Length: 218
Image 1 (tube, rainbow, N blue to C red):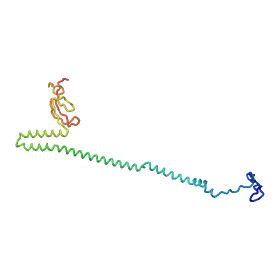
Image 2 (cartoon, rainbow, N blue to C red):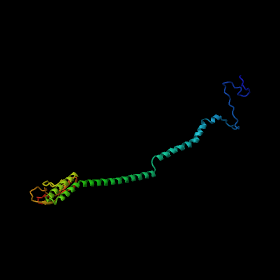
Image 3 (cartoon, rainbow, N blue to C red):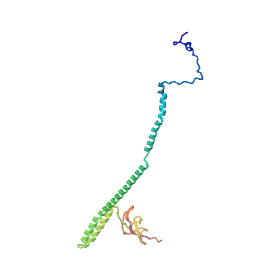
Image 4 (cartoon, one colour):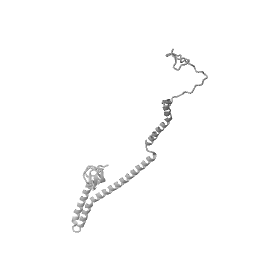
């Protein structure tokens, strides 16, 4: 029988290799002693778990900062919106003023252009009046020439002269001031142009004032 290297007569000394050692129960009255822990276990997974648990609130706090930053970056605040609205209203008011100035400028230019077109007409009237004393008969021809020039000028501006007789009455072009029965002409025929009209159908200075035939007895 093999002896234990340390010797002794206890049960552990008489146990053969491979033979189960008998369990020696601790007396129930003995208090449990302190459990010795290896210092390496303190730095093991348990220590890391405790550190992660302690730092968990610190990890949650930075998560709230991006949320707040995202909410701030989601859109402008009320003050910025009001500033934008004031700038937009100011730009709109400036645009309206520029448009009004531009319209007034264009209107004045158009008036000046039309007036300048009639300057030759006035010049020819002055020439006709200047020769009235020396040759009274030439005044009639001069006035007629000036009239023709003025009519041509109106036609250039888009308002041609209309003084057609013998055509059917058209309320777009004509304004009847008298109806003459018993003329032998069809009803509604323009018999005479009292005052010529000027313009087109969609843009007229005035319609022609005419006398029409009215043979039908009502």
